[in-house]
Picture 1 (tube, one colour):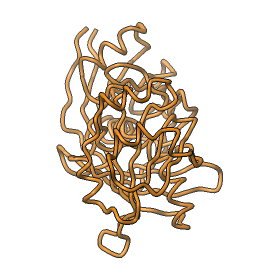
Picture 2: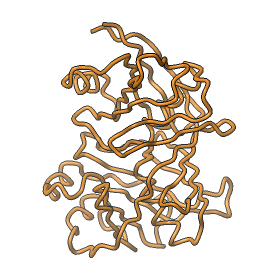
Picture 3: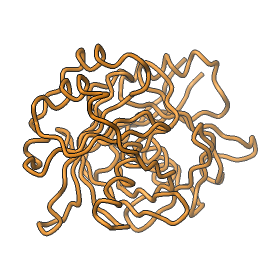
Picture 4: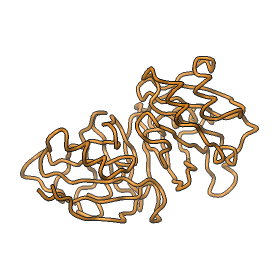
Amino acid sequence: MELSIFTVDAFTNQPFKGNPAAVCLLPSALRDELYQKIAAEMNLSETAFIMRLNPTDDFTSGSRFGLRWFTPTNEVPLCGHATLASAAVLFYKKKNINPTLVFETLSGELNVRLCGQSIVMDFPLHKPVALDPIEVKDLIKATVGDLSIQDVHYSAVTKKLLVCLGDSCDRSALTSLKPDAAQQLKTESSGKVKGVIVTVKGAPTAQPGYDFFSRYFAPWNGIPEDPVTGSAHTVLAGYWSEKLGKQKMLAYQCSSRGGELELTIRGDGRVDIAGRAVTIFQGTLTL
């Protein structure tokens, strides 16, 4: 069996920036164990598998596809950057003729569309709720050390903990963080938390005008740090929209690779996440 496979840098317009994802095109479903084996072989934070749902469709004419996401260790219910990467492969490499594509996923139907040079993803909005920092004090300590904390919120649907640094902290404090992944795993083994978002208010008056910055750590999914995380921004969008009183925001995830996301809160419990993508590799997987 030969399968087309791509590596796409998502949430960037430059190679070797943003968040790389592997994208594999499947004419039909694979044996269950193969998805995880391929993801482990690709060894990126996510490998996406796009499946034809209608045998008469192809990747150029079809408008509806199945989509699954795997880390090197497990399947996940939602992944933003690998969805963006998947859409980029279909729109840019397969020249898909449809203005909007629909992915059937574990998180329901996700619509993606082209808008200028960006791809816009229609995602669920996950507003986090306030959490007593005492409940997760050891995990916070393993993640941010002794930095001051303003807020701690939690999203039960995504199992993401959000830690907002105090106003005395800026972007440099965020970029200098060096979480202890082993300690994070040790202090949180209940399964309640699968990822920690650390965020700080941005500088909207300075160009390009980022409303907030963030980083994301998920050693529970085999990812010590994810470079740019769409799913984390379904939580961040809900948090910062309320804090800033804004429906449209520009965000920057300041990992070493870095990436930019445009967020638009909609009135139906959804959020549009827009970004760009660059394909840097394509080849054939022989099984």
